[in-house]
Image (cartoon, rainbow, N blue to C red; front, side, top):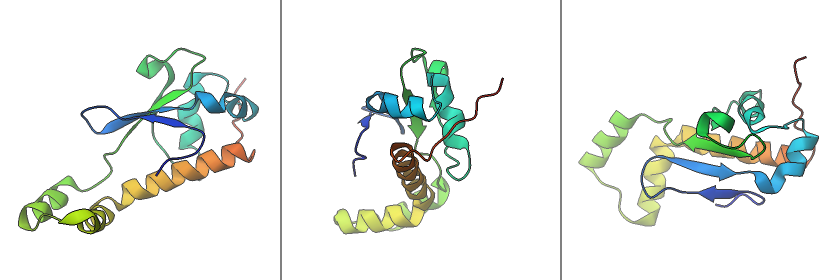
Length: 130
């Protein structure tokens, strides 16, 4: 499901995606997120605990707000074994399979949605160290 106000770029391969937060630049600035490098510390803080690669670490311009999120928080061995035993069938089967083996990734998406909502509602504030 889409999150209003952001754009997600899904690569042709791999397990990560690029999130474009530039449409929310004014809200980010109000929250104290001035530079692209400010995104990762803002997302990892309590209660969100979202680890990302952001800013210059991913070659983003200093004043552009992109981050990279990898969908990797799951037990791959158990998921693969279960898939080999009984591949899920249809949309409902795939959804149930993902809910069973990807629950932490689902929770991460929910926390990201909460962070975006909190940002829009003015509840995200980043403290800058002097």
